[in-house]
Length: 495
Image (tube, rainbow, N blue to C red; front, side, top):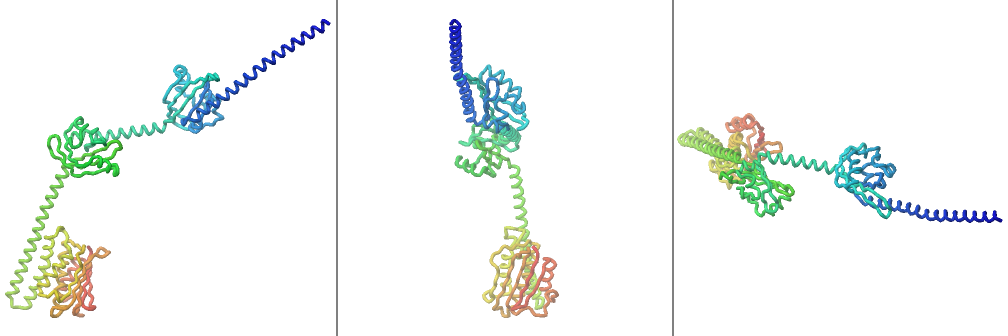
């Protein structure tokens, strides 16, 4: 009986112990589940933070192991989640992140200050090369789950630094050019056109020190540049990028008058104004122009005197002809007189022309026709003269004299022999430039025609002999004659 009671007591004790253990177990299970849920919530919380950040971002635990990384971290540093999550940051990427300065910041600075901002780190990575990064870190603590974390933001500023260095180099080059330029350069602000900078060449050129220029406008330092409304000028500059002003007079501080070319260049926030002293060039140009003008006057006077001398010779022939009773001599003198007048007419045309080196052949033909009609006393109403309208056919004086003599002979022959009794008839003169850079002269009449026994290449008359020689030897050209319905002379020679 006693044994039975003992057994019952033992069973009750064991059952009570079992219940106690069961109760303890039931209490521990929710705690374990709660910790697991908390850890999962912490992971989701970290991921939600990192994925909203544009820069590469890591979330580290208290032991500097990576809890989470955003997409931009993987993309920038060419790593994958499998080798990233749960890794010690210094072991990441075959220990490429084992950077001494990063160790110092995470292990020494961050524990003391809780955060650091814009810490610049330069490192050469095996896969992605040289990188310059700005690091920002924060220690955070979540009381609800009792977790300590570190947020590490990494901004890749490699390209920004490269552009910044290029800009610095460009600014330095511009500064050197600005300071050493031989042209005066001033920088103007765009609102009112006040000077903000002036280089040493400006002081040397105008006599105004830099401090006298800054804050003033161009007209205050002697630049007489009429830009009208300044804002309108700025709008025009914005459209074209550059504006030129030539021969701008400037009065220097000492009162000296100089001449300049001025260029306004749009430089975004400012306007660059280049001032180039052209005084010496302008004086040289004026001297050259004066010299040319003097030579032009002398050349015109020379043409005028040659024309007058030829008229004197022509007058002597006329006196000789009048005093002679020999008809053949009179005719010979008259022909010579006509030839001299044709040459004198060239000099007369050149004397009156703007261009002393060339003669307008159309104008010359018109003037020559008038003289020959008067010389041979021909009624212009009986002969239809067809001359091209004002054209663009010019020859130099070396070709103008032989052309004048040729035209004189051919037109004289037509007026004297083609139309018995002075008409009626048609005389056509064509002068033009061909596609082969040649001058073609055509003298055509519908008169009696050239006799068949006249060989233009071996002429017996003085006039045609002169024409043939001038064309071939002086002008280096060709001549041909046609006898259909009158006579046509066609002459070509190179320009």
